[in-house]
Image (cartoon, rainbow, N blue to C red; front, side, top):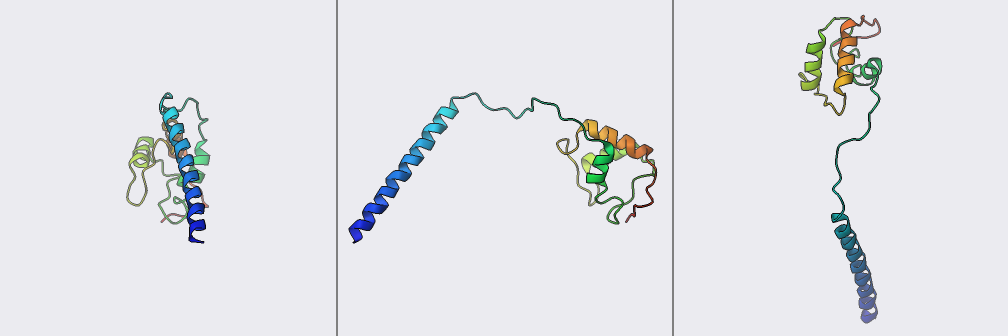
Length: 122
């Protein structure tokens, strides 16, 4: 009976080595292919400032977590610097999260925005 167990496990090991060998061969073939690049080859449509505010900024600003920023005529350059570097509990937002083009439009929109009576600040 012990002999039967050994032969069954022996077959499983041989099958496993076959899979490992096939994967190794595939890796060697892939290694000769041209390297992949991380550069995107397409343009992404910029999101509207209102959408970004609602989905990103408004999650905290205007909901008793962070100060109200709409209707305060905050300078766009100051807001952009805070968005990129963060401040206090606010995280920095990378260009992969909010593009430079989106940030420029968002900060201009915030600077010109009127206060929203529905919002409440911390």
